[in-house]
Image 1 (cartoon, rainbow, N blue to C red):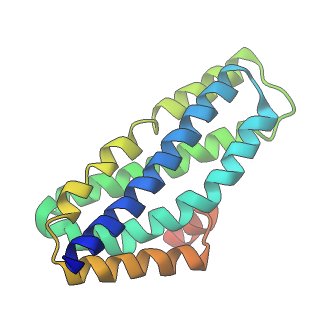
Image 2: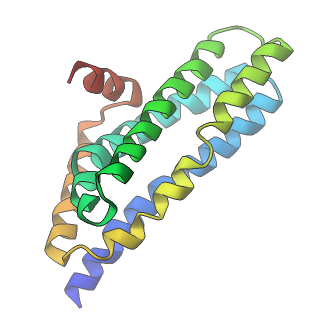
Length: 165
């Protein structure tokens, strides 16, 4: 019974992160559509603090733990999706440095957003594989998730860490 509690905690935390990201992406879509550049900047800044620790946890701890179920090819695809997210968020952030957007800027932001829009939903499906991990391993992963959050590495900082590695 205690093991089941650990399962729920890790999966709940993992799912809660994805819910927050989906919410931010939805808000970002609306801000982009309205060409509200100030709001786009605000959403991106808030997402930095959430997504950085989440990506770091996934890449350093979760994906290696799940590779036995997913295989190397799927893990590499997930890492490639993260690479794309780094690039696309970076492009939107560059556009958001401007005071106002032209139609071309707005379209570019929308296109970059569309490329990252579905990742948190598909990634959330990894919960089905997390359930298969032994309870003790799930407990250790939960501790790693919490430790990574406490480190507070932003998305931009983590992108630089990865490039340096």
